[in-house]
Image (cartoon, rainbow, N blue to C red; front, top):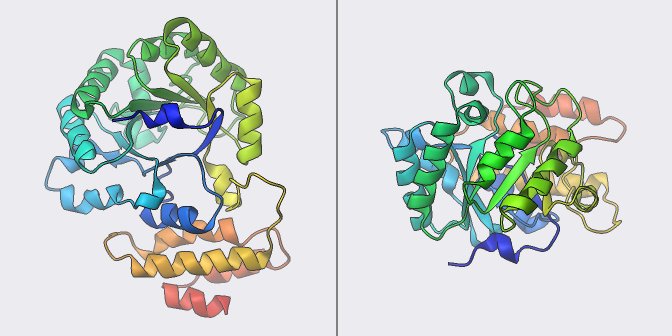
Length: 313
């Protein structure tokens, strides 16, 4: 099996895994109708839920189409045995890679010792990476993380991760405590690239934090010596964030994609998410024009797809 990371353009720009955003429907819309990233990720998916009675209510998160490749399954949790079993499942489902979430700053998740809390629990982080790699076989394993939990520990933490011999590390340039309340520190992200050149030159370093569009991602990658960059919330204000050219898009273009998004959501029944999840996308499509706020407010009051489509007419 080929390590897809080695086949990406350099530098590349990825679409970040985002809860209740990068689900199957959104990734399909991006793949079919929007300028697309070089690689996409699923939402965060819990390994404990996948190895319990919660499997049926969780497995839909791993639905993907061939158009979405390369596609990486992102997982989180605490039990190394469940990481091992989940990695084997991901291999069987024919994903292109596995990404371990060691960066989510959600307080409930950190409180139980998962995700970004693993920055301060390296013995468990090591067990998790080893178990995932064992289950993954030849499938590449990567990690998405931050520069620290409550304080910046870039040098020690990234050195530790690079010693684990993984395919890629995405570094969000904020601590977990900072959430997204301060500008990302790209100088700290650059340190990861410097350390990589000393320890594990084959591991790719991806920068994350405040990237607004594709061209900015390319520029930041070159400026800070990175292999690539990742766009997260930048996409939530601009569906055309991965446009490579200077092409301009109109309100009509946005409305056309929103209608396709609503229709595909309505057609896709395997997701057990309610209609409320669609409302997160209204600001992405309906912004930067006179009357946008009023229309968004009306869309937020809709109770189903048909009401939203009728309003857009």
